Amino acid sequence: MLEALRTYAERPENEPSSLGAVVFELWYVELARQVFAPELGPELFKELLNNSYMLNHALDRLVL
Image 1 (cartoon, rainbow, N blue to C red):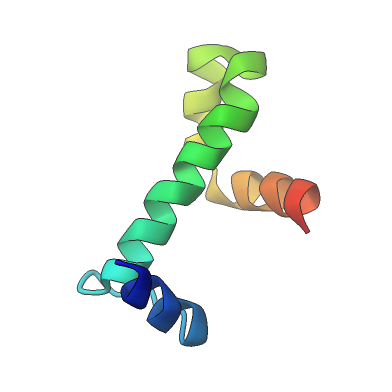
Image 2: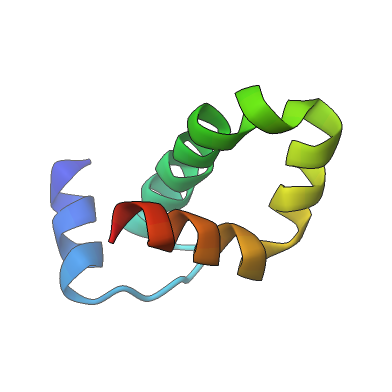
């Protein structure tokens, strides 16, 4: 799995066949859940997940 993530980090292509992309996306959603769900609650968090631009922007602002 680590090798898949290394490959994905070197060439981040979101293809359904990319194990690295799948692992990264699962981690990213779980990170969002841990950060935002306690404050937003289940309904607002679900809306955040449905708005990928807002989610990506919010996490980027926190992490980068």
